[in-house]
Image (cartoon, rainbow, N blue to C red; front, side, top):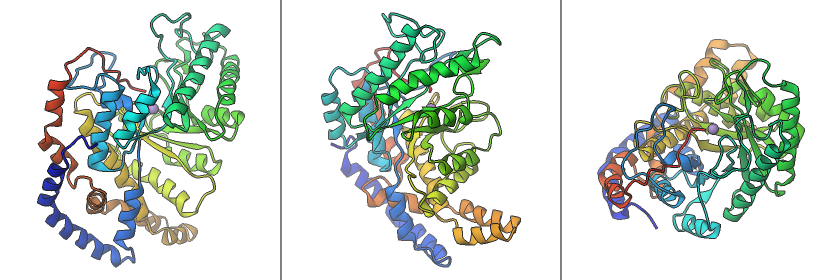
Length: 429
Ligand SMILES: [Mn+2]
């Protein structure tokens, strides 16, 4: 059940098709000189998928303010409708990552049916023990899975186990666990005992995982705790994942690192130890800004995909990372930002596919630093837009998703259909 009229998409594509064909042929000729078959790359682009978070469909905000957009989705059912618009036009975002209890669901089979009717699946479920819910018996103010009080830890463990049950009902295969636990004063918490409590609690969650599920551990350097955070970096993350077992892995959110950290190198290490869970893609300038993916550091994003494609190329055992967008849309229409960002992530993947790996290995082995770098840069500098557009077109998507979306008037129509109820269910994690 497409949300955007398919005749409109076809009509729009007709306008852009001749130009695309010309650009595609020009790029095909260029790539053939490097013995690259463009259609093989386009087919790989068509296989690429990045999930969207349910909370990304609402307008985000900061701790200072949130400026709602018009026609925002008011519940998970409406969020799925917006997500299906995104996938209909870009054709690489076929699954949605739900968040509990931001996504209030009374009947999970109804939710699953709704998603099926929109051709959407579900990615990892996300638990939330970083804020109290109305009527909650004990508070997460001083922590959740690591709280000094066992009653609070039990509540947090149970919530994660509940999230696994919700996920089972809608076909998810993973739970992402991020906690805000930490401290705001030196001396407030005993680092080692706090980490022991974390391991004790997460072992109980891990024990509740179905055999074909994985647990993704997400680290974040700071916020809401501003002096120390329990799972603050990839070091604490991988240590916890190793302690828990093979199905516990480390999730890399691009905005959750210290400034200037070499993220692509962390990715390489996680791949080596079969501990890369996947990604939350976004971009940042200062710290967890949740800017749109690829909007500021496209080269960094490309270098990360260079490691990922390299692992694919070397057929690294057990390599199957989950890709998701996780960003906050404060000044844009979330549908437009998510479409744009999905394409930017796919762009990095496609560019990484174009790296001449055998040549690069040879240059690395002969210590030709400059030519090795130039070999990488040659792929980065190519404009692969025609490949991305053709991949969308061949799957029934839009050659120009933003133009088609704006022409459709979807947002204005939602503005009339969805009067604000004051709840957006959007957040920044
Ligand atoms: Mn995240």
